[in-house]
Amino acid sequence: MQIVALNWLTYRLTNSPFVLGLINFIALLPVVTLDADGQHCPEEVERLVASILEDEVDFVIGTRFLGGYEERRSARHFGIVGFSSLISLLCGVRITDCTNGFRAIRASMLARMDLNENQFSAPELIIEAAGMDWSSCQPKSCTRN
Image 1 (cartoon, helix red, strand yellow):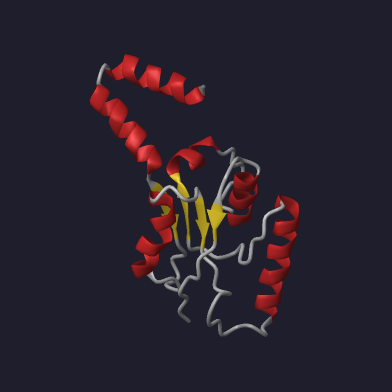
Image 2 (cartoon, rainbow, N blue to C red):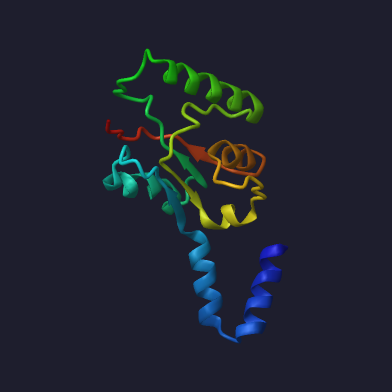
């Protein structure tokens, strides 16, 4: 019902079917995040968003644990696995790498979220998304040292 009301309001304010169509089109596009430390491969963005653009899922979280990963026995690795397990338990959905900064989410889904942290928080995003009617996948993501 919110979508109908927003569409009606948009059309009434702009009196433009073009603007209405543009806003609805933009809502289908994914929003991509990646860490700024250079560890993610930007050339993989197309593969990351493909599932969203093909309307298969709403949320994609990259995971460094599928395929090669150099820090398997580090304290950091065990921390990520433990934290991911806790979030999986809270959400009822298996999350393998909750701290991976390489993710994409449908813009319309992001707009419906109630995010309250003062700074961006990946766990908050995952937990909020899990509380909604979402579909997700976790493809392997390239990480560099």
